[in-house]
Length: 213
Image (cartoon, rainbow, N blue to C red; front, side, top):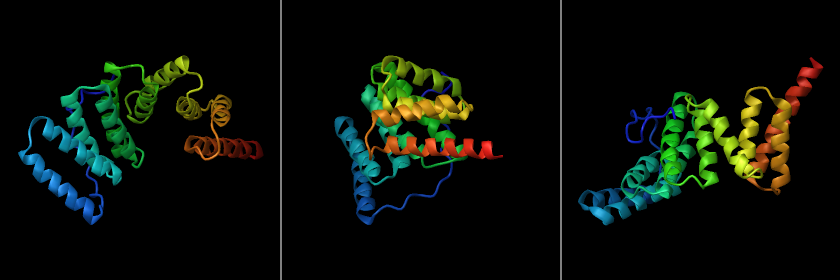
């Protein structure tokens, strides 16, 4: 694929430090102090505690590189996938070059996960999402999500993501079919269903505007 090996990334774009509750800041500082003296399994456990603390607080950009360090040691598909998911979560909050940066980091970590275990369709679907945003692999995004759908035609997020990809290249009818399929596969309250409803409304409004124009 087109991404660089994990661990060889450029520095992240400058961002404002997240505002964390005082108790989280205090616990993080304590864990950082403990990490300085820890080694081996104890250090890994404390790194995982720190990554989890940041993730639960919504500070995904702080949690992700710590989890990536854990993955470098553990070398398990789950550890790499967890790092990818943290990068992806922060990516979804950003735009422009920052979004591209975190998409590339997510893709790198998901690739490492898939290399160890390619049976997790959720991870491969998330990899496709990263590809779609990383500025390097738009066609790989399509290929990856189609592979997932080939194995599970009813995978909800893969159908939704494929709809987004089809909409981007103006295949509106096919995109609508994917979003409508998401509606048949989900129940009220499902966040993916809500997003599919929004995309359908957007496409229908655009079609109506074109027709009226």
